[in-house]
Length: 113
Length: 112
Image (cartoon, chains in turn cyan, blue):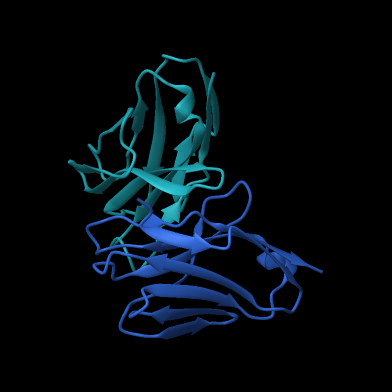
């Protein structure tokens, strides 16, 4: 099993550009999440999904969009990139949302210049 | 508003010592409290978790202590080893249909 796969691993964007961070899991997990990690700030929830076709906002959704058309994929879209979106982005998935824990991807390091 | 407050921000412990990391929460609707471990360049991984109906849970050298009345929980790492050097995050959630809220993290360095 590959687990949770995130692409790309690194990306440099110019201010105002857009991009999609890809996330796919092969564990048939119902729940998927996007977090961003900034130094000393922990992990902040951007969006999450409890199943295909269902998404919900987290703590810091502004400037981002998501979709969940399949169980496997949960892409994160950045529109009009800003320097404040410079961060490491982690995608995670979970079978039941709690006791089995979250499986995290290896992250995407994004720099907006 | 920080829903899960974690301390200290960094911690240095000698090999063989006890590492203690503390977390506090405000929302009494939280009913699941995990700890995650993260090594540089990797995503976090579940270490140990507890629910409010028990006061302590132990797995190997790792123990969670939970104080429901004080709304606090802590991670104890016994006989700390250099391989335990990592960033540790506490977290909390309100149920399976919600998502984990993480603390800011504690960077642990175990010196040999």
